[in-house]
Length: 399
Ligand SMILES: CC(C)(COP(=O)(O)OP(=O)(O)OC[C@H]1O[C@@H](n2cnc3c(N)ncnc32)[C@H](O)[C@@H]1OP(=O)(O)O)[C@@H](O)C(=O)NCCC(=O)NCCS
Image (cartoon, rainbow, N blue to C red; front, side, top):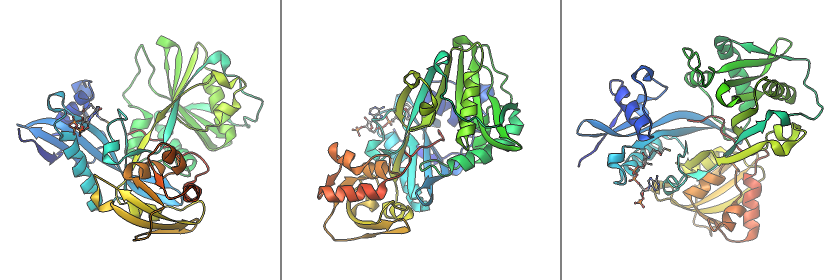
C-alpha cells in the first residue's frame, strides 16, 4: 500500500475535516463544515488511492517564555483512520512536520495529547498543567473582600469581540506558557454567531466587569438547564476585584446547582477566596506538551531566574540535529547555548528538556523519577534555581 503525504488544498478541506473528525470517532453535519483557522501550507493529508486516511496540521503561534516570546509550531488534528492504524503513518506525518519546523527555524513545538502514551516517543514532555473545576452553588460563599465599585453587565458577541481581546492580552501575556490569540481564534472562543442554543445548553453568554469606563475582566459561559449547571468557558480578570466580582456573578445565577469551569490554571486565587474551599472539586490534567525543535536556540531565547552554567548531554531520537553536548550559560539578562566537549552536568532526552523548559517541573523531580541523570546534587539545585518561575506555567489556549 503506498500512501502519499500532500499539503492540504482548499478544495480538499471538506474531505480533510471529515477525515479528521471521524479519526476522533465523531461525525460532522455537512452544514457545519466551514473553514476553521487552519494554515493550508502547514496542513498535511495522507492519501490512499485518492481517499484521505491521515491528517495533521500546525498553527503558527507565539508562546510566552521568561523574558520574551518564542515562535511555536502548535501541532493539532493528528489522526489516522482506523483502517490504517499502527503501520507507522502518524510517525511519518510527525517526522515530516518536525523537519518542516526545523527548516522554518521554529525553535519549539507544542500539542495537547488525546492520550498521554502517544507523544513522549517524539520528544514531547508535559510542560504545563490545568484543572477542571466543579462546585456546588450552596458552597460558593467567598471570604469578605473588595469587589470594587465596578459592575458586571451582559455584552453582545460583537461588543465582546471589541472588548475582550485587550483584557485577555493584558492579563495573560505575562503568564509563561500561554500563547498569543489571533483574531481567527477569537471567533472560535466567542462562539458561533449563528448558535441560538438548544434545549440542553444555551449559546455562549458574554459578560464584562467594568470599573468606571474601563473593562477589567470578562466571563464567557453557557447554562445547561439539563443538569442545572453554569459552564464557564473562560473567566479572565486584570485584578482581584474583577476576578472576585466575576466569580460572584457566576455563583449568583439562580436555578443552578453546580458551577463548572474548564482549563483553569494551577494556583488560581479562587481557591483562596472561598470560605469553604474543600468543596471546589479540582481535577488536574496535563495541558501543553512541549518539544524543543532547536534546543540551543530555544535555551538561549529564554531568561533564567538566577545566573548559572550547565553542560547538558541531550539525546534526541526524532530531531537528531539536537543530539550532543551543550554549554548553557544564562541568567536574568540573557543566555547563550553552544556545543562543548566539557563534562556533562545533566544527561537527559528531549522529552525531559521540553517538560522542564518553562519551569513547570523541576529537574530534581525528573531525576527522582529516573528521567534525568545529574553529575551531583549541587548541579541539580543550580539547574532548578535557573529554570524556576514564580507562577506555574499555563497555556490558556486549547488547540
Ligand atoms: C494516535 C494515532 C494518530 C496513531 O496513529 P498510527 O498511525 O496508528 O501511529 P503509528 O503507527 O505511527 O504509531 C507509532 C507508535 O506509537 C504507538 N501508538 C500510537 N498510538 C497509540 C495509542 N493510541 N496507544 C498506544 N500506542 C500508540 C504505536 O503502537 C507505535 O508504537 P511502536 O513504534 O512501538 O510500534 C491514531 O491511533 C488515531 O488517529 N487515534 C485517534 C485520534 C487521536 O487520538 N489522535 C491523537 C490526537 S492528539
